[in-house]
Length: 177
Image 1 (spheres, rainbow, N blue to C red):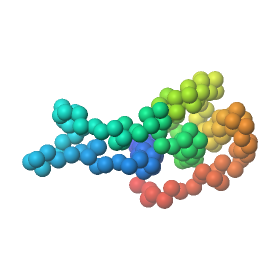
Image 2 (image 1 turned 90 degrees about the horizontal axis):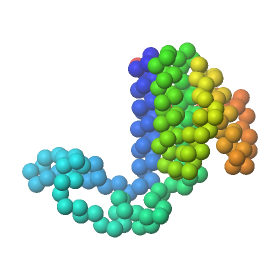
Image 3 (image 1 turned 90 degrees about the vertical axis):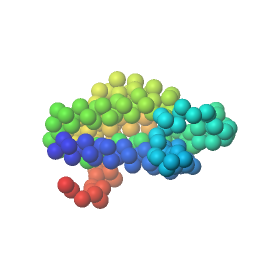
Image 4 (image 1 turned 45 degrees about the vertical axis):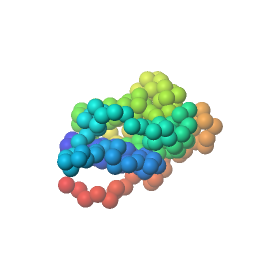
């Protein structure tokens, strides 16, 4: 069961990663390149070569004061969708490993949040409101309550947590192992 849960977390992480990347113009050469002998190399080997980075490429955005293409509102919406989906798929009777993994995931997301100001607020919010994850329902309501605290600060409408399962619950479409 814990292997299945870890797989779900990693899949969701990859989906989030690639959905964010889809907003950028990414050249395959960013990840791999071929040398003259058609050997695949990674970025670590490429870094030994002379830096040929041009201003305005993916590593140096045209406006360096705004390096993210997504707004903080867009990042927030995607992050909340991911968090609510993780909660809705959380085990009904989680193991201690499940509990640790979801706590690490949520805390890690807060710590590494792309908007550093929002991330700082998110870390404090989690510190002031420790994660409740003894079962699926508890985690779903916990994240909904946290989301409503943020909504209140941002003067957005309060969400009825009883509707969380209707919106975020269900099957993701993947076949069970």
